[in-house]
Image 1: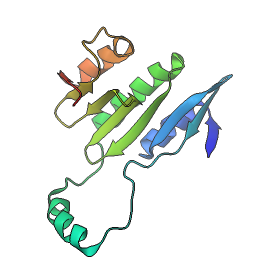
Image 2 (image 1 turned 90 degrees about the vertical axis):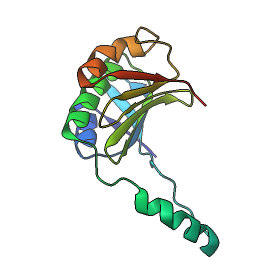
Image 3 (image 1 turned 120 degrees about the vertical axis):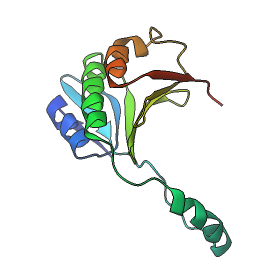
Image 4 (image 1 turned 180 degrees about the vertical axis):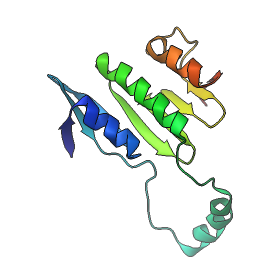
Length: 143
């Protein structure tokens, strides 16, 4: 289900740490859809036992204030250029996904970038200045 928002309402979703996907633009409105960061499904007892150890090690928490401020700036730039993207919040991280092969992950230490060659590549050139103020850019190859 999609909804239409203005930029200020979209930034409010970021402040509330709500995942969303920008599907497109209609005039001054931004068309978004809510997304789930993790899909839940039922598991049998054997799988639950195996995963319980991993669950105990899972990091906890929410994105930092610095991450939220950085993502607000990034979203303003992406919206002003009418680009489609998805924001997914995790424990102490934020992911900006452009497609399956291109995404940016703000960790508590740095900015992990997948699918781009350098900071002047495609969409990244628009937001690299903001990302560099957050922390070092680490370019990773997609698996």
